[in-house]
Image 1 (tube, rainbow, N blue to C red):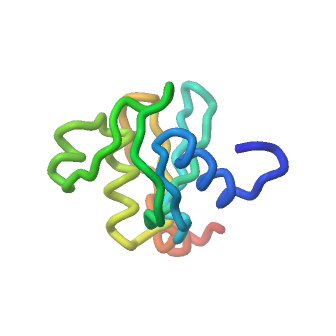
Image 2 (tube, rainbow, N blue to C red; image 1 turned 180 degrees about the vertical axis):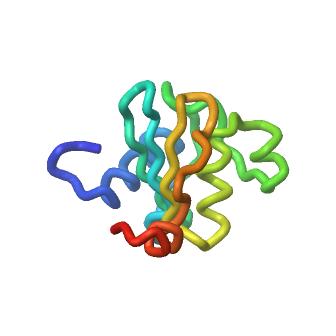
Length: 118
């Protein structure tokens, strides 16, 4: 994300740059922290609104996947982001080590409210 842009503007720009697809940003579905790299990723559900699919230096494929294909083709820490976006129970908050999700993490806004935190 560029310093002067909103998260939604950053999503639109990044998706277009990496895939050639224009998107309408719907809602934040998750926050994912890689504790090893010190990186936090915000994941938004989006709807395609135009463009032409293409690859870039940061993408290896542009395609639609079923839930089963997401689980089979992607590593755990990336697959969970897509599956969380589809479940409608977010936003989820998760931490991982770059390869695996860390256990015992509150996973949704509802779970955080139940624990009395904000």
